[in-house]
Length: 300
Image 1: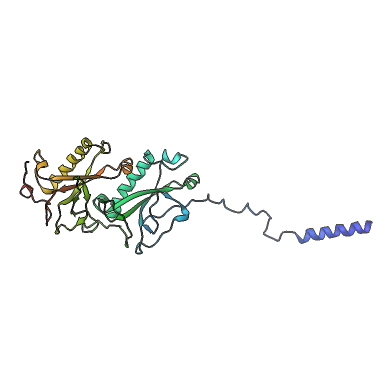
Image 2: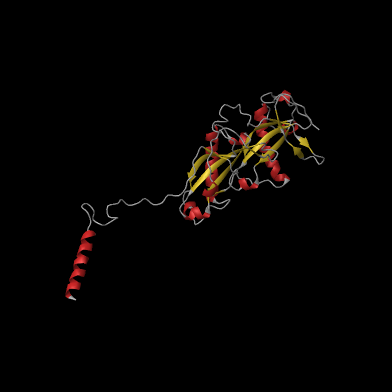
């Protein structure tokens, strides 16, 4: 029995010796490592294009960047960060909230800078994409400004899959994206049935004159509200055609006033597209700067 116990003890000592650490190793696997940085969440990249349709919620699983030289639907012009108090909430900002308005306002400004001109003067639409609720819960606070081309901004135009970046697309004032002249058609009730864009050298009866901002006004839903919008646009018509902005202006030309939809109005987008309109006319040249003789007073 004593011999056997002695053999076992010797064996144990041999095993312990075989497991001894070599020189330079202390057996502590962590005390020499630098602390790891916190895990970072996904963040999109500005100046990139995407084949997917616009979505107000940007899931990582559906995010894919492609070369803007390839056919694409949207382009990211800017990536920003929500500030407090919106950033302190448990969920992304709701539509119409102060945080959503601030992000839209930033995207409005950044898109104009990116395009090299006011995006409202062109066949352009903008939108804001925010993280999913799950990503927000994980710390994501980014928002991205998306821009896309439309076939028309007057006739509920469809998205255009384009080739080429929109960066500086409006910078020289020659882009075919810019709003110009129109052949307005009326239905039997006297309402606008269609407003296709045409070259100003072609027959037309309406011309885009500029953007009027209807600040402090509610979204128009009755004739009285629309009159305020038309009055604002008439002043732009007068400046565009170089005619007096007086009580006779309404007898010289009609006007079309087109604000954005109610959803962007709730985000603070008070820009109204304004158009000079001569029902029944067949103009073949622009009236810009032509003066009072080009638009005589027509009393009824």
